Image (cartoon, rainbow, N blue to C red; front, side, top):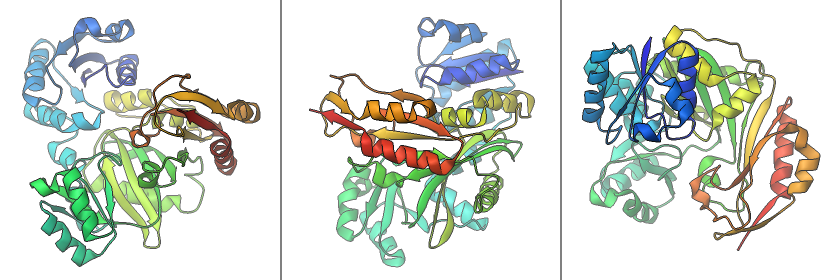
Length: 407
């Protein structure tokens, strides 16, 4: 099988997808924005050919490159795994009659109001939502649904650009940041109270063959706005046995069917609270923040290879062991500036070193990144443990013990 992979160089884990395709027997060609000379040596060895374009979201340029590649060797699949690349790749795929995620599915997995409308029509519980293009429309929605509400870009990923609004004044303040006061269409939706997590899958022909449930502590919006919190997300190894997860599995399968997701990785956010289990949003691509690293350790598996097996051979290659729960804790600097030192690292290394997967500890003098930059922007540690509750206690202790001092 001849697979064209979009942008193999950035982010860094893109090369793992290319490597996996090669390992399972595919002929791999890539289209990217950098020069051929800029490709690392190990990446070059996996590629039979490489085409440079000005931008991989310029569908015309990618289509021309793909047609040239196809004239030399027929393309069987064109794959993209970065959120920003999904739609343009789908349009190229559809223009060439190549199998894979459709433009319609890509659109529904990107455009939040359309996504929720399609899922509500399929009987899937989710927040009341709409698209608004003015402050007046947002206020009218608020009068109908009530506060609090969430405003965010229609095609945003994660918590980027997301604002909770509790009043008309909040809407007016958020309007400038989101472009709503300039006529930009944005998503507005009911704020759902409850615990937040994500459900990730690998699907083959619309059937979920691997799945993972992960919990946020605290919810993302709070985690990305509050410096003193050392936020975590933790993947459970109880997904096949503990009460409650079966409902999540059923919900995830309904979403996959409703959006006609075929062979793809998926990343689905959910809330569970007083109003029950509610769908939040989905991407037809792998999760960010290197969550697959945690899944690999937790399950004694190589998900990049599993993804490649799905694409190339239409079947999984391994079973998941569910041996560990795994998690990450982000450590925020005491202020913006430069790292001046750490307190408590030696204590947690002595206490939990046997369970540590890896860590990122920027050296003294390194510039800090803002809290809103995410879980891996500053220092972080990742751990595993066979017992989910013990892992949670371990991560809490790390958050209480380790301090990142900045000046």
